[in-house]
Structures are given as structure tokens and as C-alpha cells.
Image 1 (cartoon, rainbow, N blue to C red):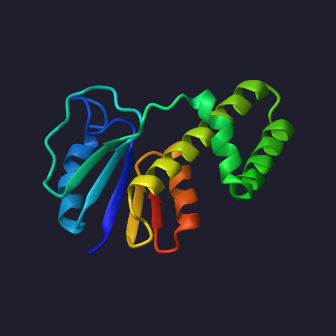
Image 2 (image 1 turned 120 degrees about the vertical axis):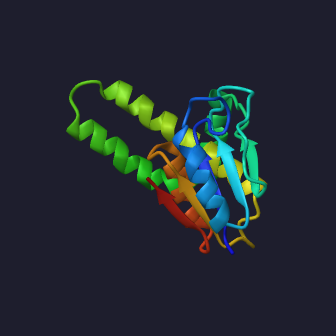
Length: 159
């Protein structure tokens, strides 16, 4: 049986955020041996009830500015080419709000690198034949694709 790494914004923390996952987690827990939920931006201390095979982790609250240069340098060429093409696209195709869009791009890239670093450092992906599931198509989905590049046995899915 495979393991699942579920990247969420704040689920299972809080009462109202990502409430749709409360139903879905019941079905997922029947299909996977272990489910790791990584909340990338937990909003509350309250944790909703979860099945017994679910392990919850919070992305550490890193100081993004202090860690960003380290993380970008550590990632090396694996992401620089992708970033270069995105920057060119924004510069060539957008007229309004270029600076805001570039800031947004770098914020998402750094967040994705933080998530990728955390997941790779806390879950043994070498021995795991697992699926990374990002409900949102945001920094978490990018992180999933970065992890998939590094670990051949990993599959990445985003809704």
C-alpha cells in the first residue's frame, strides 16, 4: 500500500478552513497506509478529528527573507531555468503590475522551495513509493513537482 502526502493550506487546523477535506480524508484513509498532512499555513490551534493512520505536521514558520537566498542557492540549476522563463514571460507579456507579479512569482517559488525542503527532510521519500497531493494549484503544487523531480518513485497530483 502507498503513502499519501497531503499538502494543505491550514487543514486540519481550525473549524472552517478547507472543510471539504474533512469528508475526503475519510475516503483517503481507507486507500493509503499512512497519510501525512503538511499544513503550510495553519491558522488555529484546534485540530479536527482524524483517522488513526493520519500524521499531521506544520510547516515551520521560517523567516522567508532570511532563508530565501540560502534556499535559492541550495536549489541550484534545478529551478533557475524555470524561473528565468517565467520572468521573461512576465516582462514580455504583461504591461500592468509587472513588479507586483514578479514579487508574487518569487514569493511562490520561495514558499515552494521551503515546502520541498521540509517534506524531503521529514519524510523518507527514498524508501517511500508515495503520492503527493496538493489540493490547491499554488506553491504546494510547485513543491510537489520539485519533489517529483528528485524522487523517481513519487507521483504528484494537484486539483
